[in-house]
Amino acid sequence: MSNSHFTTPAAGTPTAPGRYVDVQAIEPVEFVPGLEFRPVLGERTMTNFVHFEPNTEAPMHVHEEEQIVIVLDGEFEFELDGEVRTMRTGDVAVVPPWVPHGARTADTTCDEVDVFNPPRATLLEHATAQRKAPAAGGAQPTGDANPV
Image (cartoon, rainbow, N blue to C red; front, side):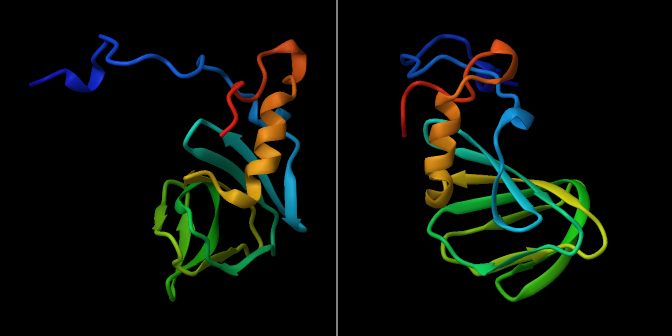
């Protein structure tokens, strides 16, 4: 069995230092009441930590970015390309570019993560500002110094 997945010889030059992010220190964006987004920006990928309050809806929409949805806690009803499912902790949905999708909670909360590639354009300004702001407690900034 090959260990090529965990290779250590550098075949390139790092483009930025690694960093740790305190997600709770990120000021949330709320496009819809009860739906909080906390985006974390890498150089080519964005991870968006999402919290749904009970009875909250993310309306049906499309976008050019590919999205992977991972439910961390709770549950919500997710509609993907006309198919509706209840997603619970550990469930994953893959949303290709321009595929209609939306979500809603009933009487429960839901915490989930959206991974976007490329970074989601509507969150980019907020994520860029967050990465330039110092994190709580004097820790490293929430993002790297190189803008996307």
